[in-house]
Length: 310
Ligand SMILES: [Fe+2]
Ligand SMILES: [Fe+2]
Image (cartoon, rainbow, N blue to C red):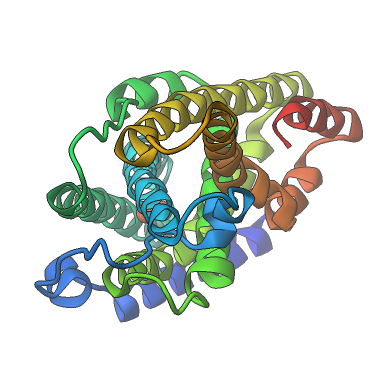
């Protein structure tokens, strides 16, 4: 039975390598191609920015809202990829003297995440060149990575799997169909999505492999760790949503009254929770995997923890 599982897993890693080689792209040659970001374009689609919940905004204010959120969207991916890559490198150790196909797949995964971080740094520079001064991205990638990596492998893989699943879902459901988006911003997430599709498969393989090592008590602790990580993610979102709301209001909030300013702050946080927590949970693919690994009582603990954020 175990030999069959091992052969199936190897075949899935092999398929990830094959696709990764076929779709391999270069930041300058394929994605940026000498282009700059144009502030006449929308960055983040309405389905992710929730801008329709702010009906009092004029069309140029709506566009600026999408640019502020789109800039943070790229920065948050760059941030999470720091801990994702460190964890993947660490897990690859288990395959050093074992499955060489799995090892190669994880090395490619790591190489791609390093490239993605570079891509998102480039996007930040391009956005900074065109947008008004005053934007600040507050969370530090290394500080966040140190905190996340203090939790169990199982919990970090669960969080990573969630992120890499919703990345794909955002692209397919919201980014790709929106004809009004900046062509460059859209390409960034098209090329990112192409490589993330393999990552999500590998996250699940590694997550199941970690899960198989745990005792019932350890798994219960791992669920607690996952809940702690979600609370920590929410802390980061609260911090950045507040900073982005202040930036937005400093640039174009002068004509807005107190009620409208409060609505901008509340919608920014609601949108960030939607983007990084709620949309992935509601999609079902992640919860399907999670529910297969934990018991009903543990699932209920997760649901209770998420309730205030939904
Ligand atoms: Fe990535
Ligand atoms: Fe990834």
